[in-house]
Image (cartoon, rainbow, N blue to C red; front, side, top):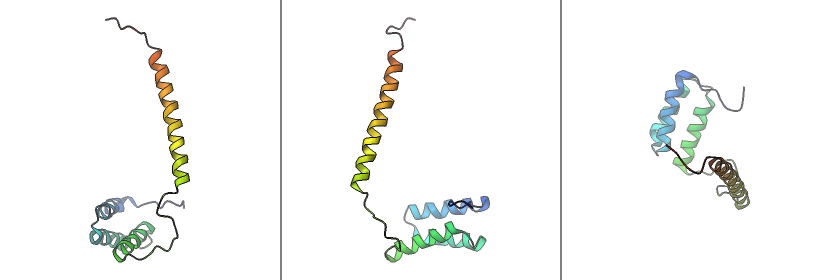
Length: 107
């Protein structure tokens, strides 16, 4: 099985509801949705992760994973440079295409 869990098609609506509830801050509804998913599929990793996230947010306990919360400035700088290069290349390609059209329009 791949890293990404395959969600059973019959549980997709439940996942969508639970995830939507969590996104808007309705953690009790999100928890309830994830519990319903686990009742239907006790091996669901996605539901377990969802419940873990809800518990983390509600209790404020620290994450087990020591991951930086703030973006790393060096990575942001590199990403911005890459975006600028990409935007410039796209601009030049479209500019060249526009310049290839006739300068006058006849009807």
